[in-house]
Image 1 (tube, rainbow, N blue to C red):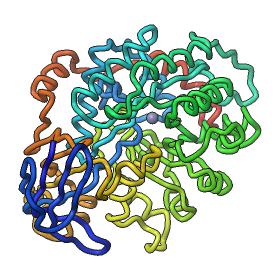
Image 2 (cartoon, rainbow, N blue to C red):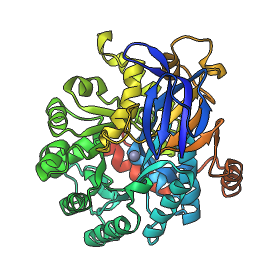
Image 3 (cartoon, protein in one colour):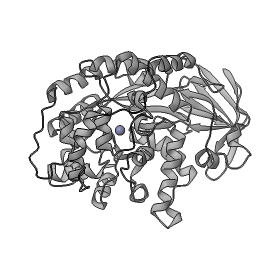
Image 4 (cartoon, rainbow, N blue to C red):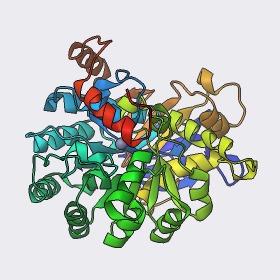
Length: 468
Ligand SMILES: [Zn+2]
């Protein structure tokens, strides 16, 4: 397909200019004023064209529990989340479609889905998510969430005798499962990439982590994991390794330019140096960190140290939405309270760059997408500057980041294919999706999670909180 987007506004170094943009065979082929119109003509008047953002960390299936879990810290929140009955692959499909739709309509063209697997139906889970992303047409990095230690291993023992039950699946079986998924579904040309993504060092043995490194090297996969999201995880890694989790990951060779790390809230200065030196990427999930009380990630320090930072929504049960523009806004202005020197604060244009090129960099794909550059894949978003939320006319990017844009996305292209037109998703029926999500769920209010109550006493003890 060929498109010519006529008379659209694009950002320049300091300002904006009006140009035509041509897309041919999936790529941006020309950016200049008054191009010879070819293919489908798109009216770009009163619109702003930006590279698509990356929703660089989420868990799509959490859509089924959004709005439901009370305000508690991660370790108790997880206990509650895992108390829900397992989903079925059809639900996985629907929540992946929902995640893709919300990401696209808030400026994203790419999603990293750290996908929670249904026990016993692991491959079906991955297949359902892959089908959903292919149906919508969003670029997807599907990262099956794997671990080889039971949930109870995720809390420090505080030198007390805690018996940890073994995980239900062996390390080798888990790695085999990932390898099978890569063989079946990894297809970068079609916009579907598999990722090696253990849940985190707090629930993984070194055998699993090094197995993931081997697979990522063999198949040229990105690596992803949660890292030091909570204070409890920091205490645990010192207990487990006698050093920080970052030092340990460096020692075993997990870090690198193909590695993105979700959260990174509890890192010290030496850890930050390691991330810079290894060219690893931090995925900042500000809403989840606030929602779970995890802390404020030292994002300004990362930026000053030269660490690549991008944004994620995190799963919809700890956010509780998939609005990428909201994550970018909060993820930028939150840090103003951490540094009196306002010259270090994140400006709207910088935030946009972190969300687009920063996201592509975290996926080792900065040469392929993430900016308005001739030759790059056409992953583009056209914003309607006549949307009430973007009026009156001021600075379009300033208002897009600092305002509260609603219905601002007019058109989206991924891999040069238009998948949003006039603010509507083209390939899937969103009215039908809404009906399915409604029909397959029910109103819930006062849930009581048994697992949360049984975890709470131990959590309060290790965190030095008053006993129940
Ligand atoms: Zn997460």
